[in-house]
Length: 259
Image (cartoon, rainbow, N blue to C red; front, side, top):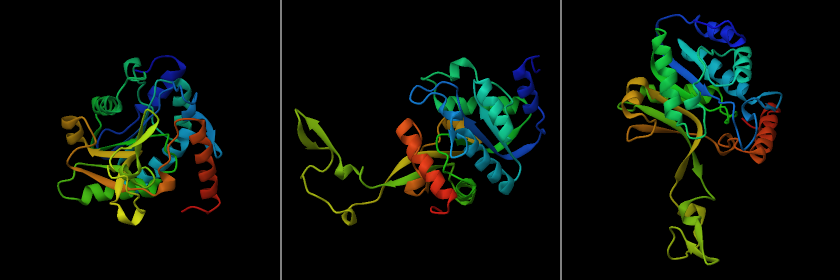
């Protein structure tokens, strides 16, 4: 039941969901606290709150996929109000135990899934959409979903990006101020054409079938696919430097310089 408070309106909105079997539960985790960049999830960037970019991408993807819900998991009334205005559902408030610095993302996802199932909603897939990666769009979400759905034996898919300057063969350590190779023990200088492709988790999206995530409690395992993202989409916001870079990239995209 919704409480007779301002947040009660938010919770009641989330309860208007139809009770049926759906394809995807898109969950956008956005807690109120942020030490690196205060209130970063709702900080205006390229003309709109940061979280709005991810909500709009998820809503557009949901329209193409069909039978989806887009939910924001937050402990902040301010974030909840902005999420509702952008078109997302806020059917619950995240408990304090899942809104601190030590809370695991997978526990936030399982909490959201459990809460929605308690409301009568059941899904084939759950997707975690981080608001700190605003350049990922609906085409990426739909493409990843379709690849996962159409790949036999695959249970999940995550966004990855090819690493170049941070390739293990280019990394080094400092020991008493002297450089010591991290992996390249011969000190050989490699050209990029000579090295294997290596990828890192770029953090913009994680999708899993719901039975797998309940069992494994992870998006990453031996049955996880990689969905390759371009370098410019792989940046995520942790601090002010990231924010400035991504805002310039978003503006460049609006101007048609990036596609």
